[in-house]
Image (cartoon, rainbow, N blue to C red; front, side):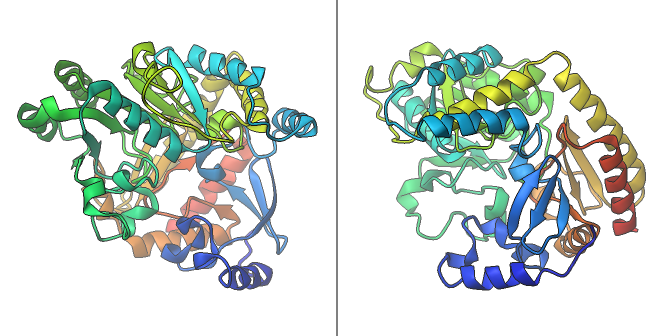
Length: 426
């Protein structure tokens, strides 16, 4: 490990740019903000990815948190292969859809009814549509730096790769599409209370990441989460927890289990498909009853409930439900975080973390919201990213993303990572 020479990846990127806009199918993969060219991956196993040049890297991005069990988990891959051999898609129901839905409901009791889709964007988009149909209202409240996918009405002060776009929304999104989306500062109880006192009766839904992961990891205050729950209940708005990243990551029952707060609707993704395209949205039975074919809110998808993703999801959740899994992950993560805190002490670097997720902000001041996050020094982060890559470690390639510790990150791997971080920021 510790390789900078990637001629085959460079050539592959040049070829890709001739046919794929920007040479990538998701903007952050281009690695422009960190001053290098993409890795083109050939294979992955456990905590490692290997590029087409034969370089192997410890992966701390883990497909943006998907692989809590590690890449190419044997049980998950076996179930997926078996499913493929029976047929990769039917457009007709399978029993595994019900079995996985039951598993998700067991983990998230707030999701009394749920429906599978193919991506987090689909899940949040659909949940918001149902919430509007249920309340008969139009206004959606979201929070600065929270990213809920690339649906037109959600690209307002969003995090993730959109954080570097200076406009309020993506180009190509008409103002009319976003005029019913109100964006408030994260962790600001006063601003939330003020808005609801003036406009609460018009709010259809409030959507938030219960632990923000797309402006880097930013932990909510208890007061803020309690205020969101109280105000939505008081004014009859639907509270949607976007747990696409935190679901099955922070606990088997996600952030809502950790905080003891029950939302009206929830979206989950990433982990629920075991590495295959799958996500879900769900909530109270009376809200979900509005979905077609039972109700007037339409939502559909040819590949929703795809049999390969359902099989992989079942195999994943089976392992996550085993006794002690999250205790072990939490203990290993806590030890890593404690040592990392010592390394960055007096270094003008902020370490934000929750459970097995963390972000290093190159910022002298605490990061509590999107404004704080955007003050971080991108040049310092770029140097850090490049030095970690030279050590053979692939951290999430944006100042506005989280890093993820998974079961496959052994004590030896984490010790090497800590040593590399110390050398990289020295």
